[in-house]
Image (cartoon, rainbow, N blue to C red):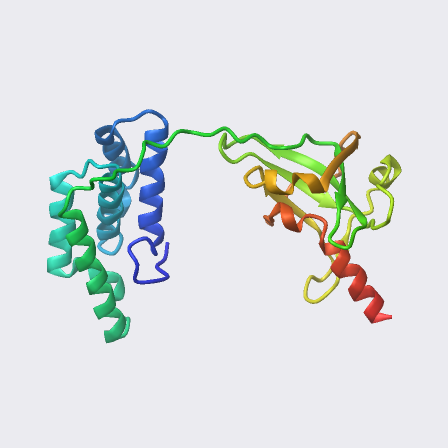
Amino acid sequence: MGTWGTGIKEDDVVCDVIGAFEDKLKDGATIVAATQAVLAEFSDALEDEDDAPQVWIGLAEAQWSFGELDHAVLDRVRRDYESGEGLSRWLEASDTEQRKRRRVLQGFVEKLSVPNTRPKRRPRRISRPPKFAPGDCLAIRLSNGLYGAGLVLASDHSNVEYGMNLIAVLDYMAAAQPDLRVFKRRRWLELTHHAWGGKPDISWYLAVHFKRERHRFELVGIIKIRNKDPKHSNSFDGWSSLGEQIVLQRSWDAGAR
């Protein structure tokens, strides 16, 4: 967990609390039930002198944003501010940063002290399944007008709102769309340009934001995924970047010669 700024939401704990609270609302919980569930989920953090004030700040922000701030939660945030407990993360920061954080907390308490007249709508859970199935063979229109190739290796449905695909880019760039022979050869694109060190271009792609890039992709066939094909990656990328590494790699290779 960490803090990266003086703003109320520039803290991992605060963001995690708000996210957990909204998840409970998406599941149909009331504000009271969501509050109880969050307090139970973050019970360990509430025992930590650094994290506890951030939990209450996150809970207060979440409740207020939906128009139902519990007075007990407000009192706890106000008490932490007045006692200085809310500044525990900032004891080693510069005097300037501490003053800035105190002003932010003061403004936050003042905001909470006035009822929210424009509360957010209750969030609903949006289903975003993976866009492709394992074995899908994609022709990718590249920024230079040529075609690249991407093989869908896996689909992850574990989070209904954030389905995703694992896609490997192949060592292919041509004026014609790739045929199934390209995909069956499994010539993964290995990135040697700059500091990539030969890493294959294999990443996860979330279903989110696919719509704006869908014109770049065309399903040209389906093949069977093999047991030895990659099934995992620690990399995540956006649809606008899918396939573009082949352009960079070809340019690098040409320069190296």
